[in-house]
Amino acid sequence: MTKLDHIIIAAPDLEAVKDQFFNQTGIMPVDGGSHANAGTCNALVAFTEGQYLEFIAPDPLQDIAGTRAERFAALAEPIVLHWAVSCTGLTETAAAAKSCGLVTSGILPMQRTTPAGTLLEWELCFVSGHNQAGAMPFFIDWLDSQHPSQTSPIAGSLCNFVVSAPKDSAITHFPRPFPEYAVQADGPLAIRFEINSPKGLIKYEQSNPIGFG
Image (cartoon, rainbow, N blue to C red; front, top):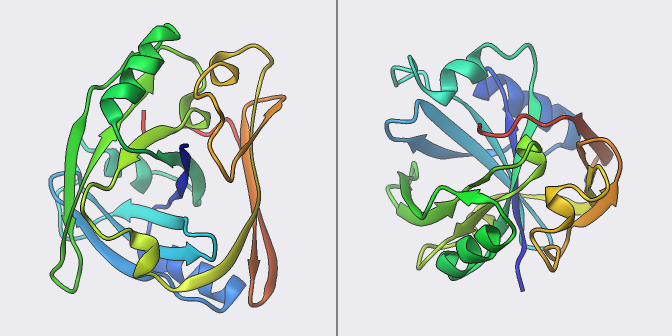
């Protein structure tokens, strides 16, 4: 069974969004490292159920011209960007997407080195051919790497992760079964969830999430 792996919040400034989250929850996200040649860096917190929240922003040590980070730098404020589904066998996932009339990126190898010097390697598969942007998840296989939720501070429990989309649109057909820890609902495109943090319930809602594009 597939399951919710992580949620991504994009921000124009990583240190600022870390401080904002700390003020809201009392938990400071831990730096995850840079994405080489992508112009971005990240910070992470984990949930008690084994998922994590990723904050991604422009990396001040990289040239961001022509990268996704250039778009993140132009954001007025942090946004819920996208979400990822954990699975093994991305070849089978890609085949299932194609059987639903969707297009895939193929399997993309990725890596980053943590501040502690640990190399993490994983594979991604993105799905296109729909008009749902960041409401449609992308898929991740962590291979033999340690899952980031195991090395990130616990921010609390993840509650009520809901992805809404118009009835009979792409996400109502794929992925199926819908990933564990996530709920699909009919309605305008949106992602919403809550974190039951040490300082109480923190709510997030993003209409028309733009995704990685």
